[in-house]
Length: 86
Image (cartoon, rainbow, N blue to C red):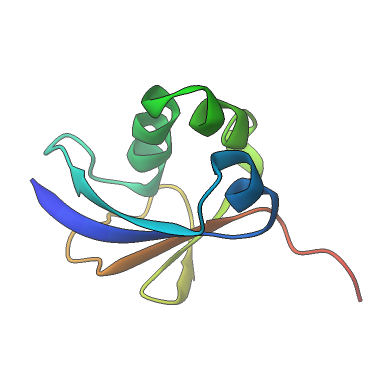
């Protein structure tokens, strides 16, 4: 089990109700996609935040990654909706 700092932005943060948290991850959580699936099991607020998980963007240690990216060794994982504006 590894511990990682999760940081949430925009409406992901609003739906969960917190901006960040330290979380112990089970051994079977090895990719960003696994992490999102795991988070969805943590309660209604997480389920609502990650309902459309395909639009969620992720960054590991402040580098943008796709959902297939392994999270081993990550100190910080940020999860956020697509960027908008111009």
